[in-house]
Structures are given as structure tokens and as C-alpha cells.
Image 1 (cartoon, protein in one colour):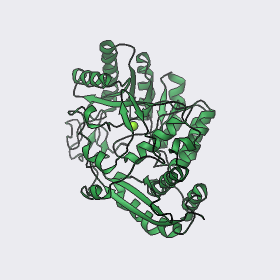
Image 2 (cartoon, protein in one colour; image 1 turned 45 degrees about the vertical axis):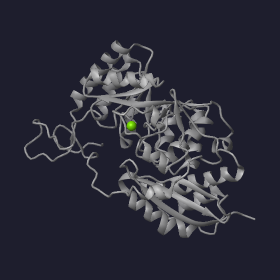
Image 3 (cartoon, rainbow, N blue to C red; image 1 turned 120 degrees about the vertical axis):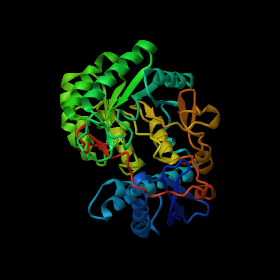
Image 4 (cartoon, rainbow, N blue to C red; image 1 turned 180 degrees about the horizontal axis):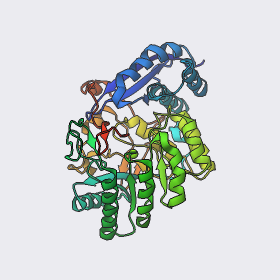
Length: 415
Ligand code: MG
């Protein structure tokens, strides 16, 4: 008898102060349920509403095994397609259905993708500091943990803290995160010179532009960073300006990773077929979950483009697990961003919290050990949700300020 969807619930929880959205799909089979990540931290109530008011009535009573059919059904049901709210809502259900599929097969999800082509997933970590000294100290600590690829930044993505309006801004300039593009480029080049001279050639270095400068400045930066042999330069241009990747390609051999903000296949298709990027780094809940991410990974493989999925703190351990399961089975896997969820004994206290609360809410999350992350071998995604613990950490709905990034003249700049 077919296993059908009986109920769909949304659980919002913030064990580390970041709003996480989890979707739980319950089935007609007693005890058989799936969990998925629908986290859009800055619009969590909107995603919750889409799941509860639109997807649940659409899906209850349908066969839980028909993942592709249900994905297309959710995607087309509102007539207008895509966008972060819709896609994250779909992702919550999609990941939960893959979790259910794995549990039904009694296999971890990566087995459903053809099995492992590597045993552990090499991850990169983000290091910053007030100055070169502090940054290098933080990098060394990651190296001691076995991490070989580090993303480096001085301060918070090269900008001032929110509310610190510089004296160079016009009178009456609005509060924001101020960033001077030219200064940022000078400081960044100096930073990488310093890191290479102190730490040598072996370490793999990454830098995230975070779309925070003008495209012509990004061309200049990619060229200026060439001598420092980056693993990649991350998101040098905004999603709306990806034509400029052609200019970056023409002017430098610095490898490029792009895609943290992508929503839809039309946004990455040409970048991959024309080989304008080296790494695709979408946020997989943001494109609609495991189903579209697997298709993207296989598509990118045909063109020699590698994966570097987004893996920040503002996604749940379920999404980190989904990344890892896809990575394990992907011949074109490149590197995985890891936001620092180590078992407590691995933690660098000054850099990140102890993650105890997160581990209690989400038992079974993939484990970090000596530079690699490992999925557990439980059926499905291998991550559970302790709803009683989750309740202890309610989400807060506040006005987001870090996205109010401003140029030197006070005008808003993509964050
Ligand atoms: Mg980034």
C-alpha cells in the first residue's frame, strides 16, 4: 500500500539565536516521518505561512514516494514560480521526502544517489580578525583542527559595523554598514600578501567579495589577487550583474565561485555552459531543495564545474546534512563551506559558541573530524529534531540591519 502524507508541520527554532525553519512531513506509516530545512532566516514567518496554508492542503493524502511529481506540483501550483520564500518552503518538504525515501529504503540518502565516491568531505572555514596578526592566529587554529582551506577577511566582510557612519559620508547620511570599494581592494590585496608571506604556499585561500563592490572593481580585484593563488574568489558580482564575469575571465586566471543568491536555473545555466565560473555555490534550500540541487550538480559535472555549496550558520543542520549527502556522491565536488558545527570538544571557544544547544535540538548532525565532515550511516538524512528542546529557543522577528550595506556616498549597495 502506498505511503501517503498525513500531516505537514513547521517548527521554528533558534538554538544559536539564528532563526531556523524545519518542516516535518508525517506519513500514514506509524513512526515514519521526514525532516527538511526551509530556513530563510530573515523572513521565517512568510515561509512558515506558505508551508502551512498552501503546501499542506495541496499535499496531504498524496503519495509520499513521488518526490519528482510532488516537487513539480509545488513548484507550479502558485502559477508564478520561484523566489526565496516559495523555494525555501518547497525545500522543507522536498528534503523531508528524501529523508522519508531513505528511511523506507533503510539507506542513508547518499546511497540513493549512487553511493559514496569519497569517505569524508573536506571543508573550508571562515577566518577574520581586526588585523593581519589576529587573522593569522585564527587561521593557525583552524589549521590545527586539520582544516586546509580557509576563507579570509579583515573585519566583517570589509565593512564598518552597522551604525558607524564614516566622516567621509555626506551630512545626514543614513545608518548602515559602510564600505569604500577602493580602500577595500587595497586592504584585501595587502591582507593576502601578508597571509602568504607568513603562512606559505601550502594553505588554500578563499576570499568572499559578498557582491559588495562595483563590477568593474571586482574585475580589478580578481586580477590583483592573481599572484596569491586563491582556491577561488567568492561572489565577486551580484546576481543581477553576472555578465561581468566575462570581463573577470578575460582579465585574470583567479578561479571564481558564484551563486549563493541564485534561485532559478536560468541564473546559472549560461555561467556553467560558457564556463564563466569554476565553482557553483548555491544555497540548496534557496533553489528548492535536494531535487533541483542534484540536477544542478549533475549538469555542472558535464562542464567541469565543481560544487561549493553555501554552508553558513543561517541554515539548519538538516541542510548541512543535505549538502554532505550530495557531496559524498558527487564526482565534481570541490569543497564545502562549514560554518563551524563541531562536537563540543573540537570547539574554539573564542571563535564560536559551544553549539551544545544546536546538538541537543538536532541530534545526529554530520560530524567534523580532522578537516573532514562525515555523514552518519542512519537511514535518510540522519538528523533528527528534538521538538521539546526546539521549543526552548523561540525565534524572534526583528528588522535586519546587516543587509543595509552602503557605499562611501551613503547609497545602498548589495549586501
Ligand atoms: Mg559568501
